[in-house]
Amino acid sequence: MALHVETTGDGPDLVLLHGWGLHGGVWHGLARELAPAFRVHLVDLPGHGHSRALPFGSLDAVADAVAAVVPAGAALCGWSLGGLVAMRLASRHARRLRAIALVSTTPCFARRDDWPHAMARGTLEDFAAGLRDDPARTIRTFVNLNALGGPHARDRMRELAALLVERGNPSAESLAAGLAVLHDEDLRDEAAAIDLPAAVIHGARDALVPAGAGRWLAAALPFARYTEIAEAAHLPFVSHCAEVAQALRHLAGGESGRKLAHG
Image (tube, rainbow, N blue to C red; front, side, top):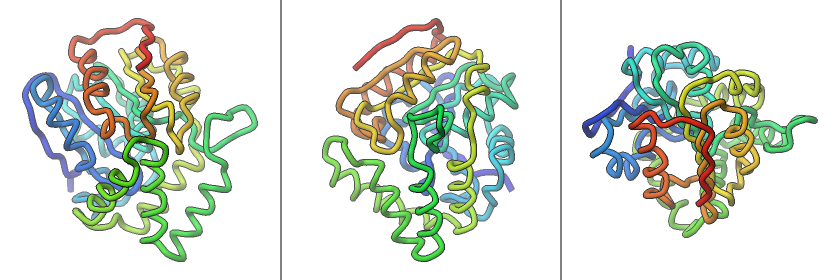
């Protein structure tokens, strides 16, 4: 059984990977903006949305499952947890890709002694415990953090709540496996070895992934263009759709080189 993929638009292939607990529908606004420039593919990750019947599994397994539906020569864009999947896929299947974009993500979600740009490990462990005790409430709490700090945060939270029920809750097993990936994985060495044209996009007000992680990625990736959006939180493609679309359009021409652009 293959992953569910929704496709729209015409042009070079661009594959979008969502974050933990959500599904490809979170990209609908951005997909409409990009459809004139790209053929956009919205993937439901294993265990999420219309791919709910598939197990999430390890990061390698998820990256391989996504690689199977990525058109050859596509650009790959990952948001949050989807960014980890995108980085691992770029490491394991680099020849399938021509470019990568990383939105509000980090090579390492859990704080370490040498890595301050992250969540406290105990916070992720609390979410894992919450999943066991009250899964629905834990998902809502985590997803609401996506909007915290950004413009019209309450409206964004309501939109996300509606999205959560649109395709049904992810499986409990896949949610737990996804949190384990967020807690355990450290892809800093892998990220620095990705030699594809890259766009790194981050909100300065991100309450889940500090902007320092985006700046680190932009410096570590050999061919990265960085866009930091001053008023955005963890959902820049929702709150600042036009700015994110413009940053991604640079990938249509395969632009590369270490260029920094601050919004």
